Image 1: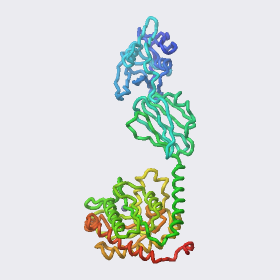
Image 2 (image 1 turned 180 degrees about the vertical axis):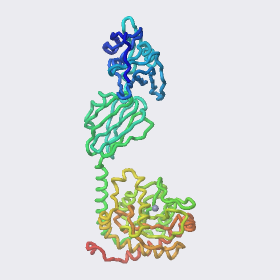
Image 3 (image 1 turned 135 degrees about the horizontal axis):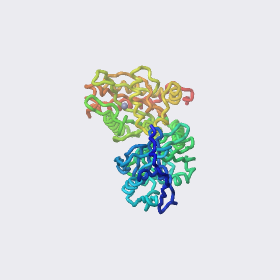
Image 4 (image 1 turned 60 degrees about the vertical axis):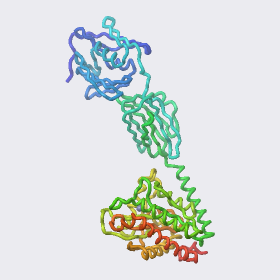
Length: 515
Ligand SMILES: [Zn+2]
C-alpha cells in the first residue's frame, strides 16, 4: 500500500545547523500547519550510522546511546536505550509520511524526542524553517576505537579496543582467509581501524557500519587456521585468538624428537642397566578418568598405586631412579607424559589405569596389561577409545595427535619395534606376578592403540589394574590396602624383569639391534 501525501502539501527545505558541522538542508513538507522533516536527510547531514529495510519500510539510525526506528506511515517511533537494551515507543500525533524512499516525521515532535535522548537542546523554528542543534555530544565517540595485534606462542592475539563493554559478538573465519566479526549495537572508528594495515597476519580491514551493528572484516594471511573470541569479562576490549599452523609447536616437537634420538643413542651405551623407571599415573586434574559404582575416581586410584609403587622401588632398588609423570592431582597431557619419559632416559614406562564397562555395576573384572599395537578385539578398541578420549580436554589436540589409523600404526609400531619384545616380556612377567599375589583375576596381555604409549622410546605397557565398574573390585581398588597390594605385585614384576634384563635378555628383534 502506498499512502498518498496530502494534496495541500507545501515543500520547503529545513536548514539544519550545528556547531561542529557545516549547515545542511533537509527536505520538508508543510501540510495543514504541520511541518514534516525528512529523516533520511537529517541522518546524512549529521553523518549518523543507519540502516534501512526496504521491504518493511523501516529506517533506523544510531545516536550516541540510543537507536531510533521510524516506520513508514506509522505514528510510532521505537527508541532503544543502548546502555540497557530496553526499547520504548513514542507515539507521534501524526503518522510518518513516506514518499519515494524518504521518511518524513513531524519536525516539532521529532525535535522533542531528540532533545530528550540527546540531553541537549535541539530546536525547530517553523518561521525560519531552521532546525538548531546545540552540541553534538559524543557523536565522535566510537565503541570500537582501534585494534592491536600481538604475536603469541600459538599465533596472534587480536585486541579490538572498546570504549565500553560490547554487546553480542560473532566471529567467523571463512576457509578462504576472511575473518568476519559482527558486533551488535556498536559503532567503529573506520579511520583508526584501517590505518595500521598491514599488521601481523592482517592484510586488509573493511568496516561495514549499520545502525544496529558493525561488521569488521579482516583479510588474514593463510597461516591463520582458527579464530576464537577470548572470553575475558575483566576487560571491555574484545579479544580474538588467531591460531596459526604452529611453527613454534612444530619446532618443539622436532626438538624433543631429536632429544629422544640422542638419548636413545646414549641409552645404547648402558642399555643393560635398568636404572630408571617411569611411572605414569593415568588421568588427573580436570580429567577424573572413569568413575566407579561408589564414585571412586580412576585418577585417585592410579595416583595412589603409582606413588606406592614408586616408593617401593626407591626403598628397595637404590640404583633405580623413579620418574613420575605426576605426583599430585594435576592434569598432564598425554604427549607430555611420553615426553617426560623420553627426556628422563627411562628404561621402562608403566602407565597405570583402571578399567570400566560402559554400564555399571557390571560383572566384568580382572586386570589386563596392554601393549601398543592395533586393537584386535572390540573390547580392546573400546578401552583404548575411552582412555584416549582425554585428549579432547587438551588445548590444540587436533594438531598434536594423528589419528591412529592403520597406516599411522605401521609407523608408530615401527618406531616401537626395538622395544616391543621387551614390552612383551615385561607384560608377561608382570601379569604372572600380579596373578600370583592379587585377588584380581588375570585377564591377560592384550594389545590396543593407546596414545599415551605412542612415542615412548623405551619398553612400555599400560596396566588396567581392575574394573571400577565391578562392585567387589572397586572395593579393592579404592582401599589403601588393595592399592598397596597392587603396587607390591607390580614391584615384584619389575624386580623379576630387571634381573632378567640385566642378565642380558636379548629377544630377537629388528636387525639394528645386533650388538
Ligand atoms: Zn584410564
